[in-house]
Image 1: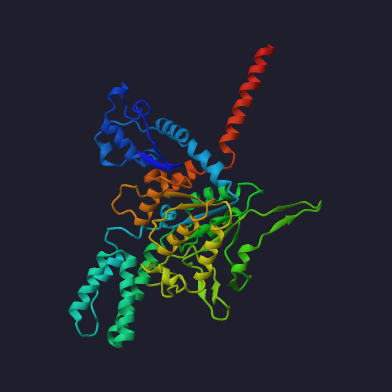
Image 2: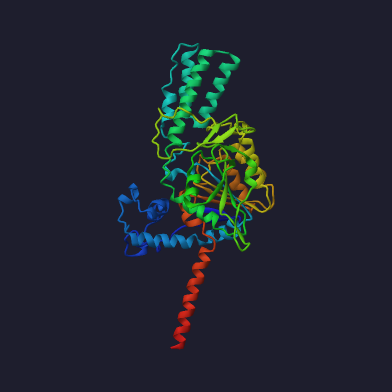
Length: 464
């Protein structure tokens, strides 16, 4: 089952035994067992991709030819049409539309999940750490650092920052402090290598679909605002390929510097007959920084400039020498770090835009672990005309689900302004862009064309 809560009602996207009979190569729908039906729903994402590699299907006779899969996709489109209509009519055409995107939206292009129990390079780095110079309580300190390998990356980095500060400012132990700083820099380098530089910028077809849908909303609505917690440049590169204007807060040509007042600028094309059309574009806010940012004290008041990024370069951990300082790394206490410039200005803009009248915020690929972002969403919900729609890969029954998301689920039962979509289908960026977020008027256009053809055929038959 793939669930969503909309207007205080629990719904599910599911298939009946009759609808999937041909998939299991059954002669009678009664032969499709409850176990098979449940397995079908669990592995729906793999089925419509055509990648049936799960052990569950190895023991069953399935008909996975393209015609059968195409029929399933068509059924799925019909089952999600109500969702598309609701998103189009009540959200996508909102006067002030905002989108919050995080790591889950870049994973199809090679970004990796940060919070996972799998052993990764940063955990190995912590497990194998040893002081290169003898220090007091060496064994005890090394044991503390080894234990951090079992924590989430943001918790581990938070603790390392605390230790660095303690031995530098309180105990003033230069030997321990300097070695811990080296460890922190290695941790950050490994993070950049394994979670940011893994993105394949040629694999951006979903971003293309999503951006095209955003900018095709029509000339009567304001440009959409995208707030992202990602460091990668998928949005910028995709928009450039599509000819979509991106306003990311930087101005200039050769030396681009951060100027947040540019977010309130708009551009239009002036025609010789006096008419004009506004250019299609988006405002892009990189709330946690970007690979293309660098500190530059010659660019007051924010001291940030933007550089070109080499998308074709093959990076490895040895080459990542200039660790971007203009990034809020995955620390637990992100609220503290986001109060510094230019992040304070970015978050101020986030608050300001979300508080505009009749605002809608679409949230995708976000785990609700950033307390500052959560605070802003809570504040926005105090406005009676604010609407929140969340696509969550985590299911509401998952034990590792964010406490804040749990609270949103409970609140949505009484607050019709909150809509939530759960599961590995409704919360997956691929299916959000393919099935849930529509092109404006796409479903209506198909219906109008079909009705016109039927009517014309009927009139032709009556005249014969």
